Length: 113
Length: 123
Image (tube, rainbow over all chains, first blue to last red; front, side, top):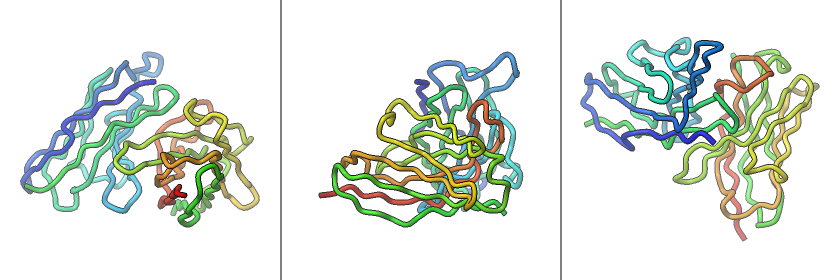
């Protein structure tokens, strides 16, 4: 199984400041045949299901604010919130869909400083 | 809009089975596979399996193989997940989630998710 490791476990950022979340996979999730990284990011607010933010590591889902961006390739990925808003307080998860079983990172809790 | 509505919370005794349903609306049901995942207290999200809603073919995580059955009713646009031989460690919120890409050859990302169903296993 591919193990997804996120860091940090939690972070507190001031409103308007940048938040950076890291995700590492135990093996590459890049398919050379499609030239794509098989990685998604989700946001989960309390008492809600996860919500898709990013797929293919860097493609923003329709309707997601452009302050959210994804980057990285192979085994290392980053989710960046360029200017943290109050409504961004949540837990963020990365997920690989490169191989079965699909696996998730342990989550990063983002709070306001 | 695309909506997945799950059945309500349930309490089961160890050794019993639980069935959770997921009713889909707002899109062509058989055009997208459906996944099941769960989130135990303090644990990460865990993928359990998926179903090709067109032909009913399923794929399960090895962890749950032998205990999980995913089925669908195309006349009602409902997917079911049954988990048997329940133990306390199965206490979790169970989610259905649509495979957004719509390609049955392999799984992709999940969008949207159902609201979640809390299953509590307790004697």
